[in-house]
Image (cartoon, rainbow, N blue to C red; front, side, top):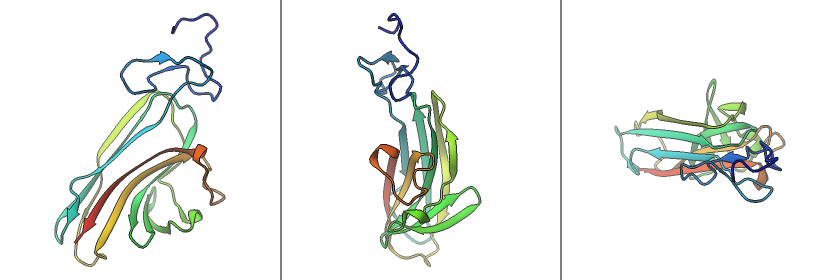
Amino acid sequence: MNAAPRLSAADIDRDFRILDGNGNGSAVADMGADEFSRLRLTVSVNQSTFTVGQTLTATVGATNPGLPDAADWYVGVLGSDSSILFFTSTGIVFGSLSDLTSFRPIATGMLLGAPFSVTVPTFYAYQWSGSEPRGDYVFFLFVVQAGALADGVVTGDEILGLRTAPFSFK
């Protein structure tokens, strides 16, 4: 199947034709005009509940079997009041879930290239001092097509991946 006559290198969406689209470790061409591919993201925190003095450690990862597009990457923490703390290339910035124009990426226009797989085991570490608002939080990794949030609106086909890890500070 991978050596079919006149098999193009890319499908109708410009995804690479022969890739491991389902994550089973075997790269094969899908039947049909549209190759099944997806950006696989992982996010985890070291525990689900924190108290004063404990340290939150967040791990993020991404695997790309074949998406060739450029992407904007957003990483942060969502609070129960819809406020967001974004990690950017220059530091921490605050935004709001109710205003997508406030979203600030950690990387913009990053070429995905394929294939790749990366995990950052201690992407973020934070020791709880007790001055933080108590409640529920969500650590997230959100990837969209480059420029998708420029107008403050994002559509489903512009979202390349979203992974979250909930936790609480008591």
